Every structure is written in structure tokens, then in C-alpha cells.
Length: 238
Image 1: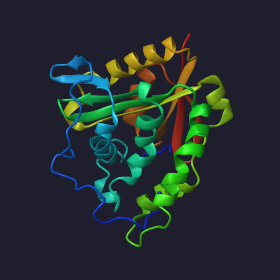
Image 2: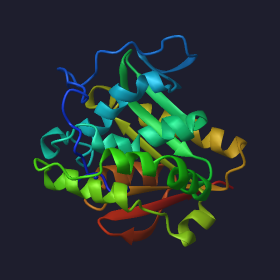
Image 3: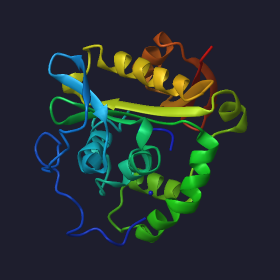
């Protein structure tokens, strides 16, 4: 089961970044941004557009219910173009890279889901739809699933976004899992959302991803509804 939440390309050649061993693209990420230590040799900081390629790789390598989804995709970027890139561009104040010291994870959120969805409908999806105008003949089923999502973006149910107006994603590579990083980063995000006026946050997790569901319940999330192959969960701030 691939990432459930929130795919059409005729442009796939030299423009696609090569995936290097370890999954981190060879780019210069920004070490000048103030960071906060989460664990020994692991920090969290505001994400920047310089982080885009390595965070796209993190998305790919955690896209199979937390496991590596690389073999499920022909296009190594398409998943992250739905689940990562929009946040760095349109919700940078709630976008964080987790580094060790290279980016090995992220936690991303939008303060107001309805406003975020409307902004993407106007300023993000049209360009991505143009980029992925046609499905590449080598697309795998997972590419096609995301391809169709690009052309018909998912919208949070009103019943969910009314009660839990913010939403979030978090993904960590195995090398930084099991160290308390996810819980600490999520609590930090809660504080920032509350300070900005949010009354609650929701997320989507694969129905089969029982480990992630358990993690979120320990952080106070409750089950809301099943949507396709995803479970929507919410956490009120009060």
C-alpha cells in the first residue's frame, strides 16, 4: 500500500535527478538556517527550496507505508511533487527538514487546509498538470495513481477540515527512526500551529500502516473516517 492522501508525463529525460546511493541528491542544502537538536546528531530546521530534491527522495523512500517505494515508480519525483513540493512553496512557515546532517526526514503542514487547497488549485496544480500532461508509457501503477491525483487533486472532507482545519505530513528515513525524533518534531509542530491560531490538525495514513496509526494515536490523534485506502485521523487542540 503506497502513501494514501494525496500522477502524467511526457517530459522525463535529462531533467529528472539521478538517485544516488543512500537516496540523497548531491545538492548543497542550506546549513545557515537556525536549527534545533532533536537527538544526538539529528536536528530540525525550517525547510527551504534548496531542500526540495533531497526531500523528494525522502518521500519516495518512505512512500510504501513507510518503506521504500522506489521500485514502485518509474518517475522518482512524482510522489513528492504531490506530498512535499507544495508545502515548501506555499506553506514554508510550517515546513521543516530533519537533518543528520543531510535531510533525512520532514514534517510539513498547512495552517488552513481550505485556503491551502484553494491556493494550490490556482497556483500549483495547473503548472504540474501541464508538466504531466500525458502519462508516460513506462509508468507503473503507482505512477498512474499519482498521475490521476495530479489531475483530480484530493480535497479534505468538510466535516474533517471544519473541525481540524490544519493538516500535516511527517516522514523519516530508517536511519533516524526509533530515536524519539518523530514525536518531538510533531509536538513542536503542534505548538507552532496552536500559536498561529489552529484549533486542530488532521492527516491521512494508509489503512494497512498500523505502525503509523499507533504512533499517531499516542500523540492524541483519533480515527475520523476511511476515505479510499486511507484512514483520516484528527487531533484537537484544546
